[in-house]
Figure (tube, rainbow, N blue to C red):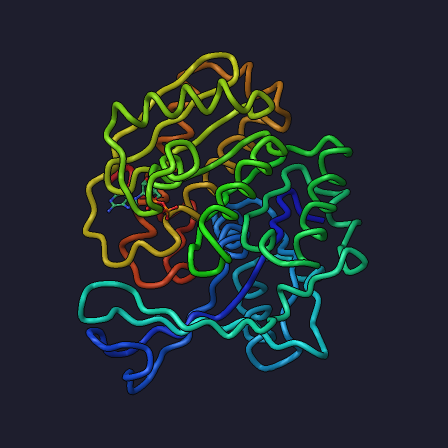
Length: 335
Ligand code: ADP
């Protein structure tokens, strides 16, 4: 059984082979396995800890391709459910001429949205140490109830709960609903990872892609910890600028990003949170209380490792092909 269980959506991104065109005008697409919680499970496995992915895909060639890809990356996929009635979710994406990403989703509904509480692999949840989830399966019922049921089971069993809301505006009925849902579900978690844009979105009501200044990040991090008292560790990713963190016992810190030639930032945040979890596990930190007790220099070391994993993930195209192994991270940090 796996130490880290990641629950959520898995889907295929079909990325336009040509940029500067809309999805409708694109002559062809390349498939890329996606779904942030699944990427996190792969990230954890690459970094040497055991992980499982729990979720629902279609019993179709794309669903099997996803499960095979995760299993090929070392993830336990025994808890993946294959729907006989709904198809695997697909997202067609293109970089349009105006620089905006043009999306077209096939989720009407997709299998991940129809994940039922009765389909949860409660044994794999019982056996884990860290339970990680996201917000995409909190959008629609019945997947929403299923996700919350899993979080509640994991909490009741004393697992360390990790949450990466991973805001995807086009999937929500409105930004207000997204903000409300994310605000409601943050207190369920022991550790939360957000990008600085997401932090500004939930706390300041900013538009979802607005970056923050370092001063704003400082103020929001402190406000977040004051407001969400159940959270023991807040991790804020800042792209090339690196990251910042806060703990329940009042410690906070930041680490500068590592210089790399970024090719594609997809999956950087997933690799980052996978690395934070692995860093905690390597130090036997498996409870919220143990996070309080972590010396500041150990936290700084964990976040420096996570920054390296995030940076390396940007140097290759796609998420899963780019998530690094421990050996690659060591070579990068020593080189
Ligand atoms: P998300 O994918 O969740 O939006 P970010 O883009 O902030 O997350 O990236 C996550 C982490 O990956 C950052 O905190 C940083 O450590 C690393 N990272 C991302 N982009 C770059 C970059 N261009 N250069 C160096 N590191 C990066």
